[in-house]
Length: 564
Image (tube, rainbow, N blue to C red):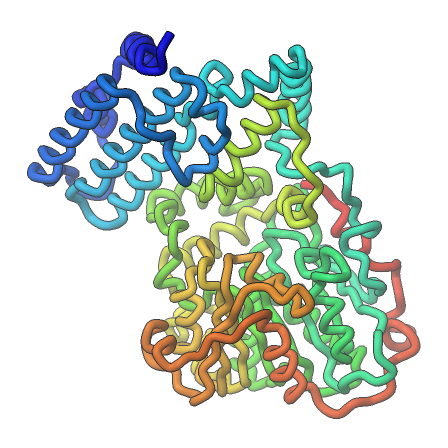
């Protein structure tokens, strides 16, 4: 059979197999008969754009059925294997999928509705298209079929075994988890637990220098993840880097909540955890002030704690670093599509008075923000091809999920994501204090990642507009995690700085006066932190201080070992 005849036969098969028409695709955007469309405002389509899309679709469909695909979706990694171009049916499936994907995306763009509704529809279309890709189905994936033939069915057997194993775990494996163990080859920086309560353990790390700066340094990681994202391997550990810079370093290790903590509130986490950690680090260091860092949600919590202290007239923190942190929640990026009054009220009814937000539910949500990379890629590899994903420390950490107490979580959603009340002076009361960010006069270092889909770079920059003290802002390349975990020795990526001390209203205006620098931003941050760390003193020989704060157990401690 000639290649042209193969295309024609594939076209006939696809007409029977798919039977998609313009009218059927348009119906995909309409609610079932008699059902209410759960959108914020009336929805319509731009008739001119719709007519143009229809004409282009029919023309391209006619050409595809008559001539076959010219090439198989160039630039799309899902169809990069040569098997896709060599198999007429597979090539036709990929080309028809690409055509329909372009039309559905165009229809979403042609929708006439408020911006939030449009964003939700675009997100739903992206999810549907990611799931409907021919590469996700054994009957349509020639690479998986070829592997099954080459292994005489062994790849299919392994795929079924992988699927059953993941069903037992409750999530899709993204890495070979047998390759890692917390405390053995991740979270290995030497230290000890010097304080604990029901919410957190405080880790102190063994000095790597003969002298240390007199002001201790406290890191507050997000409680929606485990702290060892800051201590994956010795070569990419921000914790080890801080210790090597001569800082007496402390890190909060959050307990993974179970039902015994299901009633805990935002106030509990600020008062009994962040503020407590600041007090303990000061006492152990025997100083009036420490330096502090907050990462992601940990940065939001640190900002709350600092505002509580300012309301009390206290200044125990000399400087603060905020890494990919939301303080002004005006722009929450793609996560905004999930947040409205109905959604928040539902969560409040479900768990506002007690209960747990399951860690795996949250992890799944974040994975589906990038469905092709973090979901379907592993469906194809693990189940259709029977492969074991390679060992990767970052993805191991990503799979090690944590729960959140319902009252904490719902208060956070309403007051920050929905109502953005942290930037309103005296709008929030936390730990009995009215929060007013205008009272925070300490110097701050603010970092944002240019391609961050969780804390958009504009949102990270917005902190410069609400924090009144002396500031330094840096923009790094890459995303939410890879941009932060970027050690200097790797010599990867770039960062942008502006040295005139000006912070205009928008990021674009700031960038107009910024300069790009190759490599990591860590060294710039280290030089900044050094200026706020005080004189150098002899490194302590023991963990903790006196009888009150003794070493309880070696780092990484028990809390980080708890599974959700």
